[in-house]
Image (cartoon, rainbow, N blue to C red; front, side, top):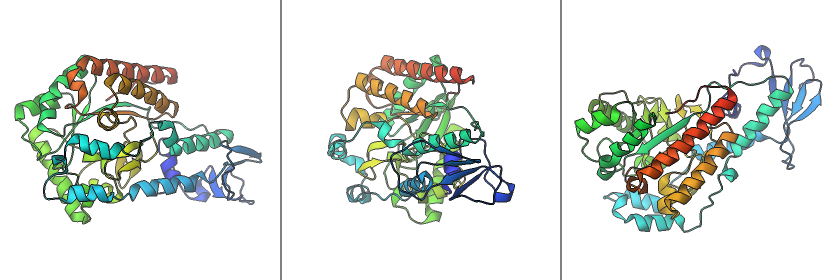
Length: 381
């Protein structure tokens, strides 16, 4: 993927040929060009984080942030599962036969870092790029205002039974969420499906919550599995299914490349950053809070740590988790990113829906405040 397009995706810009461009991004200076230029230096990063106005319509970036972003992006797209994950998900039975406490212990063994600000490198680079445009008189406008997106993964029948209680809270707050369900993991009664789909978005969570998706290397097999899940859910819920999230946030280029062909438009599988990512057994993410297009699918990163990470893997109590989510949401706002929350209906909030309601109210207010300051209409899903 072109790194410049990746960095500038949130804004109303078009990439084109030099002769047709209003501004040129180049390595070194083009002495014969009368057009404004953003120059990418060859020198190593010297610690400076600001673009420099060199005069005569030339602005120099502080370092080669385009190559750095490209390297991080390619590393995320080409992630490989850890040996322990491979062994657990290659067995004839599902990985979750191992008790959750043991799985969480393995993930937390290296003491994950909870500071999200250390893992927004691509957003920091985007800010510098936008600053360079500003210095040349090009004030970029976003394609759409940043959103608050509430999502749920229903991994089990227990989660399905508790889903409607979460939806009741959201309906009272006029919040429409996205529900990701595996199509063949457990029975889905049609009456419950109808209630859950009413005013909500239904997404695929693969066919089974077995963690095996990342091991499928044949493109046609991936497309067939993903298409099967979408078709089954559309039949059950009697609604269009265009959103996907892989179980355990499995993410790589092979999966992404099959999604559009399987009929999906949006993928919610990529974490901005996850301290203890199951498939890689370590920290992993795309290091951006902004959506981006790749292989015909809009990738919407998970920008807040998922509840399973905080409550199960890292052992936080609900109050501490809420405090951290609020801090993260404010940080995401400072980078103009989407606030994307993931909860599982079978975890701790199911025992205290008042705290879940409180979290939603706070996140909603954060979203309202930032859109009001930007003069935009609040967008929430």
